[in-house]
Every structure is written in structure tokens, then in C-alpha cells.
Length: 211
Image 1: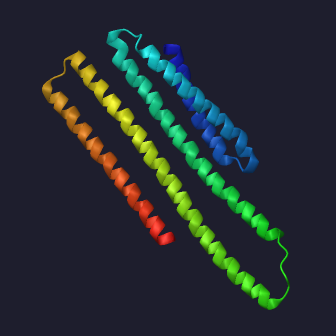
Image 2: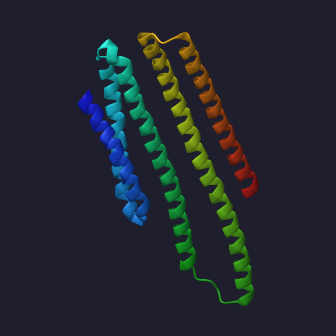
Image 3: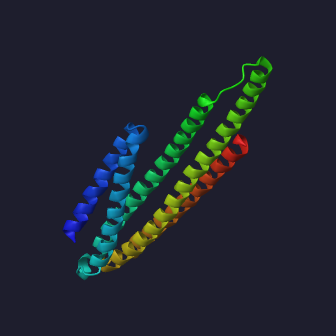
């Protein structure tokens, strides 16, 4: 299990470095890096599933600690998935803008002055609507990724919380320490709910003002 754990942890760090190359790439150069990152994420996910099985074969004294380490790998993998989704969303918007710009540049317009004025006015109006629509889509996509990441993180934190109690019982911690842990867990829950509320509020304001 140790070798698979360290291999997966190294793979996560290498994938984080791939995101730096992805941000510096442009156009078609991003496609092979996107595929490489997705393949690494798939491998990390598969390794985490195998580690979940191997954890149950660990000695009882080490099982809780091993489970927490695997959960940390899952938590990091969730962040990698969210980062890739956000990048793909931005890249889709950029490519769509480039395609529309190329389409406009390739059109043949009549040289009649009145027609040109009408076309310019319609084009400006259409461009404004397109920009507003893209802004709303981008905001909704980012908000959806954030909410999805928060939901997944909440599941991981709940599992870690339960295992922390198991470890505490095993080590025989005092009741006062257990109450402090419970209080911190409730505070984390309020922070999570506050983050969700702020995200929804920002998304609502973006939709209202851009439309």
C-alpha cells in the first residue's frame, strides 16, 4: 500500500505542475496537455479506489491513519478535477469568441453607407448581447464548479470527522478534547454553508446585472 500511496501522491504533484504548462500554452497547444491531465486524473482516481480496498487490509492500529491519508489524496484529486473543468470552460468561451470573430472578418459587406450604418449598429448590439451571454455562462460554469467542489469536500470532511472520532476513541482522548473537536466540526459546517450562500448570491447578482 505504501508504494501505491507514494506513487499516487507524486502523480498529484506532477499533475499540478501540468496546470502551469497548460496556463502558458495557447490554442491547439493546450489539447495534448488537457488530455495528459485528464489521463493523470483518471489514474489517480483508479489508484484511490485500489487504496480504499487496501486500507481494510491494514492492521487495526494503522487503519484509521491510513484511511485519512487516502482521503487527503481524494481531496487533492477533487481540486484537480475542478481546476480542469474551470479551464475547459474558459477555453470553450475563448474558442467560441475566436470562431465568431473569424466569421465576422470573413463576411463581405455591401459598400452602401446607409447599409453600413445599420450593420454597424446591429453588430454592436449583437456583440453586447453575446458578451453578456458569455459572462453569464462563464459565471454559472465557475459557480457550478465551486458548488460541486464544496459538496465533494463536505463529504470528504464528514468522513475524516468520523475517522477522527475513531482515532480519538482508540487513543482514549478526554471528553473535553472530544467536545472541542465537535465544536470545530460545527464551525466548519457553518463556514461551508456561508461559502455556498455567498457563491449563490454572487451568481444571482451576475445574472441580474448582465442580463
